[in-house]
Image 1: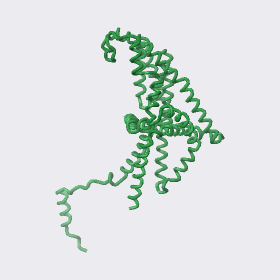
Image 2: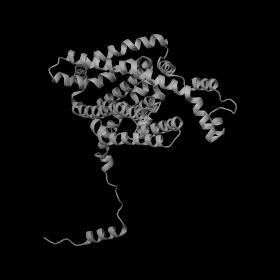
Image 3: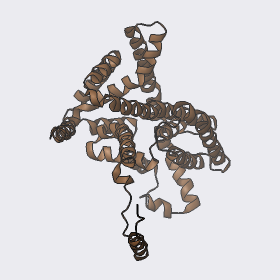
Image 4: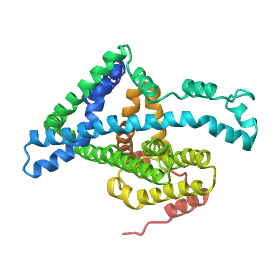
Length: 376
């Protein structure tokens, strides 16, 4: 009875936490972002502590490094991508003229441009309505995560709240882990610690290792495409790097986008071949250097499971679900493997099938029973 009550309590507890998370999802994004950054920075802070830094000094060093990185992204990367997109919009009439001269009107009609409509003003209007620039993309991003808040208030809140949450979680990370560890029921302590270590290994592979691989690939793609002179080098390279959390997805999307751009810009096959070479070299570097160094065999999730986790999280909880979809799937996978091992070791799996004796076997048994016993 006590065992049943305990299981019922934990089932009710997890259902309640899930429902509470669903209700609070509009305000959880800055806290999840702060927790993500703190999780990324905790190993760096621990290494600095081993070099005789105080915990506060290590946290401040990591926090300043993260801040500089964010400023580089905001002050350099976003304006550069915005400039490249604007440059693409200006050159698009020329590219569409080239498409028309080689394919006729069929392809233009397919993308919604009728014959006689091919002029600079209308093309730029179509692009602005369907693509926009980075400022519109940022507005859409903020609007998608704002919930019931005003956009300006939400943006201001996130700018101040995420650094504060990151700093305090990073400073007190080890203390929080120790307090959570002290609340674990003692009879389940060994099992929970084993599962926690396995989950941390998987999460480190995804959240720390995969993030490092994504950033490295984005830089490699961007530098390589810039060397061959592609106008959209940084935009395409960073985008291909960011979607490379699914194996080969960044490679396929990057080659397609960069190949189309190279064909439109240079209008020859040589630069298309150079694009393939850039992504081929990046793929070799990922396989030989990046993945073994940063990830190894820590993930254990199938690429289809990765895609499903991200899409399911977004469908259930919006942008907050996208943030937690992949880490949650990684932890769930650890628990599924644990229950699988328990099942394979259980009597339910190992119980042998009870077979009915055949007639011949029955005859042999009856004859054996009829033999007279030896007299004493």
